[in-house]
Length: 258
Image (cartoon, rainbow, N blue to C red; front, top):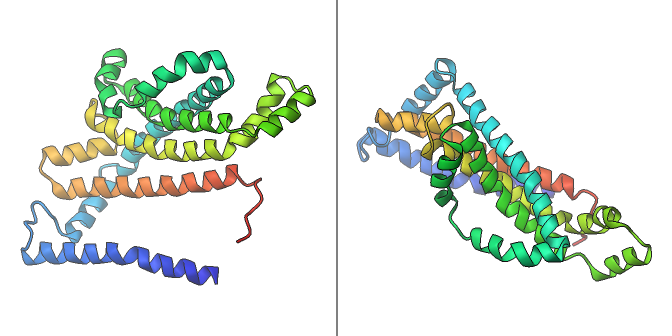
């Protein structure tokens, strides 16, 4: 029954993309759309093959993924530590949380000029930008999860005379894990969006974003489309990976019976 339901959802999910690709190809082939702006799927497939076998598309993707993973891991570690610190320290909560809540309202792209001044335009600046993008949702969700720890469990910890380390590991962290997992999920998605933004707005270098910029500058829309499709497929894959990671982190929770 579950398999049949997944099959139905899959068919429904691919219906619109298939119709869009059909409309795309018909418009390009019949002249309804200028092929210079909307190249045919055949041209895009040829460009993808050329980039894959002749121009090291895999290498460009590798640079983007390494940038993404490095920034995400930095943002994840700092975000969990910072969110825990704010949640468990009353002094830090009173002093830092209002400022943090104000800073988080600033658009992520608005940080690019400051990051470029502080860290330059090279690889370091891009990783910092990605780390910042993943840090914010992870820190917020960690803070909320830690603050929502059940009072009865906290009282049990006091009765058992848990030290600070035991309270964090046995009470606060397990209670906050669902919220932290959600933050990690969001952080992984935001990190990829920031990777694309960093490659586009900071200095051009190796990466899929540079591929899209090269296509724009040469007015090669097929190359731009290849880059966009690669970015979309990787983003979708990272979203699925985040879902699997979230399920793994929460595997200890009892499954709800409908």
